Length: 344
Image 1: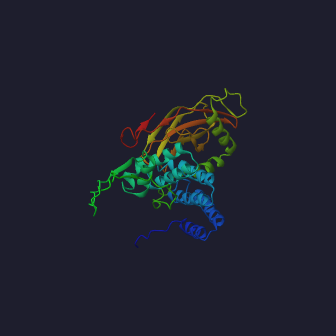
Image 2: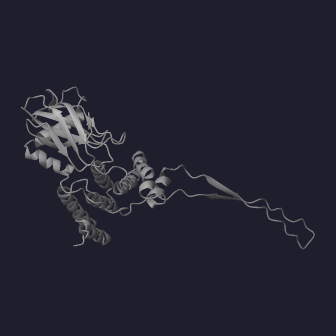
Image 3: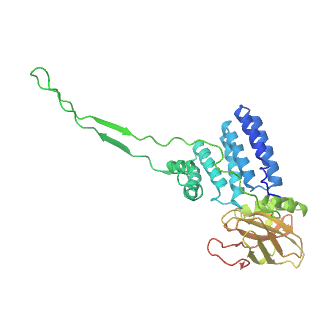
C-alpha cells in the first residue's frame, strides 16, 4: 500500500483561526490558537515545527489586536523552544526570528530588532535564498541610510527671440532625487511549512516535566531552576533552596547524533536520586528528566545532530538541597568525531 502523507494535526486549527481573524473575530481566533498550541505541546512537544508554526500564527493575531507585548512573549517562547532541536538555520525558526524583529521594531527595541533580523540576514540566504523577501527586508533594515543621489540636468539652449533682444539667461537646473528608506516591515504569514517531527520514540523536552512529576519532585525541580538561575547572586542569603552536598562527578557524554547517553559517578552511594538538565551552549539548563537512586546513566533522544548541547547532573538530596556537576558538552560543530565517542 502506498504511503499517504498525513495532514498536520494542527492545520485545521490554523485554518479556522485564519478564517476567524479574517472576519474580524480576533478574540476567538486567539482562543483557538492558544488551545491548539497547548494541545500540541502536550502531544507533539514544544519544539515540534507544527507547534512552532501555530505559535507564530498566534503571535500574528496578538499583533493584529494591537497587543505587541503578547506577540513578543509568544514568539520568544517559541524561539526558545525551537532552539533545542532546530537551531537558527531552520526555516521555521527564521520565520519566527523575522516576526520577532518586526515586533521589536514596533516596540522601539531596536537592539533586539537588529539581533532578530541579523539571524535572518545571516542564515536566510543559504536556507531561503538570497532573493527571498524576508532576507531582503532584513538586510534592508540592517543597512545604512541610503545615500542622497543628485542628478544634474543639462542647461537648456537659449531660444532666439523674434526681436533683437538678448535671450534670457536660464540657469542650470538641479533636481534632487532622494531615495526612500525601506518600507516598515510588517508581519506576514509563516514563510515555510512544517518539517517532519522526530521519529517515534524520541523524547521531547515538553515531556520531561511529566517524567519528573512521576518521581514526585515537581517542587524540587521548580526550586532547582530558581537556584541555578540565582546561584552566586546573593551569597546564599536568600530563602530559596541551596546548593550543598557532594556533586556527581565524571560526567561523560556518549554522542550518537540524534541521541546521547550520559554517564556519571554517584557521590552518595545509592542514597539519592538524580536530575538531568540540558540546553544549548550558553543557555540556562532546563530539567530533562530524573532517575532514581543507584542509576548512573540516562538516554536522551530527539536531538538535532548538527547542533551542540550541554548537560549537567544534579544530585537531589531533598526538596531544598542540591549539588550539581560541571557541564559536559558535545563538540559537533568543532569536530566530526565518529558516532559513539565519549566526551567529558
